[in-house]
Image (cartoon, rainbow, N blue to C red; front, side, top):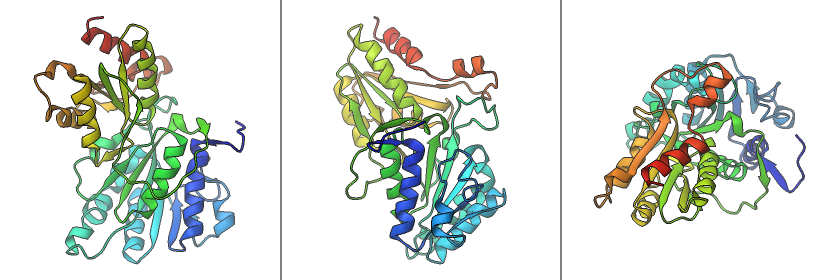
Length: 328
């Protein structure tokens, strides 16, 4: 895929963010599974080892716990590690270090020692990778104090949010949806440092709020266009970060529209969509019937492309759900 200099792809955004932070701070290092010689399994980081050398960009064995533990140790020693675990499905192998060391160290040190590290990982279906390489395991980490979770939907946001994550003083999980790597948009100038935990309104509306992140944002925008054709005005929120969630954005939008649908690619039980509903319900004034969520069934992701495509929320299924709720 060729793009002009005025465009930015999602994978290009990832590389640029890491490149710029490596250049800006000698304490930033980048390592992980096939990130150096191969340039990443999704071709997001080619050429960085050649530019910065083996001591700052290097490959590692396929051992997720070793990776997360090395990141923790180097952060304690004053480095700012960026780690890639190529498929988020295997983050559970790294959970002991991430949850019991990295996320807690600031508290255990009496708030004296920060752990600035970033773990990048690819998530999501749509690529035919099957049930063990297509999950979105964000819910595993939602209840962990000390962790931040970022989930961008656009190339420009991917760049600005990754740069912010690398500069953050807390451990950050940075999730990248596989189907977004080849997406492109006009390049935007980045000034200052983004604040993690802030969402944004992508489309103004007055009748219903559609909330999502990553690939789900495009589906919500598509559904909003379909809804406009039958007289329903949909507001679309891109959460961008899932821990912390932007409670004010969610509540302000729901207070305006009195109707909110959270759309999540992940199991419906225990997901972030339920948290969005709970946050909106705090300002609910008798409109509970118009607070609901869409997610995947509580079963493994199918391998068959036809079954996989039907498994996830889509612009059409979002449209149909809102139309039914609003009696159109």
